[in-house]
Image (cartoon, rainbow, N blue to C red):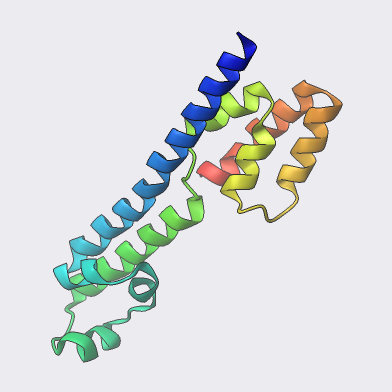
Length: 144
């Protein structure tokens, strides 16, 4: 029975990871399309590097004040979506922390950089409760 639950957990985690990983790109494309339809065709890196003068060279028309503000707001929103690392839903993060896999969620959200996930791994192996507390305290770094 234990193997069955581990199998279900692995399936849920992998399916949820694939489904949630694509939503960041979809949200970014939606933010880009709000400014201009031409921007929806751009890659995310090109969109983040776009300035009003580059837009004028690209399309031949000048961005107005409102569209410039919309461009900057959309770029900020896209950066926020990308920085958040919203690959893992907040509820899944909490479930992983409760089950003792908070270090795994922290590592995935930070692209395995930094020391937070290593500290959480050590705390989880020493005793489960400090690892849970550490994961819940550090959750604000990943989810604002």
